[in-house]
Image (cartoon, rainbow, N blue to C red; front, side):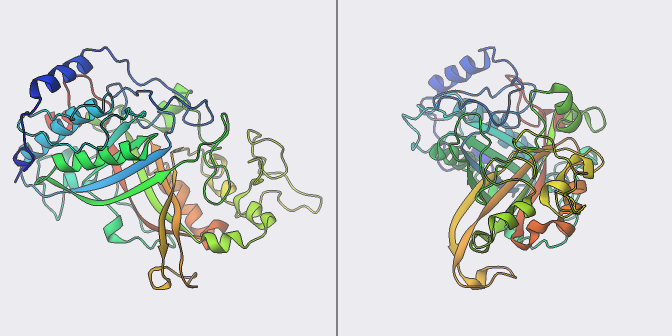
Length: 425
């Protein structure tokens, strides 16, 4: 069964929806502007983020407070089914990011189903960012959709890192969608509706929700370990840095120009044990002061890391296996990534469901859903995390249990669909 055969198909309100889509397509929305992803004044909940643009929204967009990342597996063997799915997802996404007060239409009027839990709610700055996994190109040795030759070299098979305990059911996928919004119900609805539209073509493989605190204006949000997360990000206002480190250029296939590669990792953190450690040890582990976010020995969060600084006894002020030292560009041949992480809390788990070394009764099933964008994961996440996985002091509290790598194509113009350039090639 393809997505056009969805059991909730209806023509209800098609003319109204078509008019709405036409209005969105003809609104002249500008490409997503380079805007600071963190440390800026919060936008009103009712604000609307553009869907169409040079880049996909949700990469440079100021970080929303709620996230739902979902990976899908494709069940169809037909190329046309995948194209129809992407058309329907694009049309529905263009609508949901602008309006929640009418059903979100698909490109095909025979495929229109929607839940109603967001009626009366604003879009809450909803963004939807799409990615293509390795399984879209080749799966079980088969080129199902005749796109194998268009797989980018940068879409690598991720290596096995030291300490990885990835669960297959929480990893990989043929397609990915990240919904971000300032309202958790809006983000959940977006994924729920796209899953409905994919019935018979794509099915949910795994999903992960996340959240950010409502930090005071101008402050970097804190993660569940109590430290500010994202201080070392390159500024998204710096177009040259974004072009160098985040967005693909002419080095890969044409369909990926202006796109990016997203790496996700579900990091389970032994919060109970972290909370029992002294603040000084926590700061030595991270390499920053907990209260201010400043590098060790410095006063302000924005102060530069001084990796060569030594104390009166000649010891490094920032320990040699501190997280920030190992993750710093200076320690990785200048490599940089754009971090966009969210905390997660999935309740509690029993000892039998936890990973060593922590096996002491019921504990929080919580941590960090790490998300980062980069021009080439081989020169970004893989290079940086290869060092971190072996040497980082933080490893004694964290376990990577899932995630994936996806190629996110560039943005779309009105009338196009996500991935159109790939299938046209």
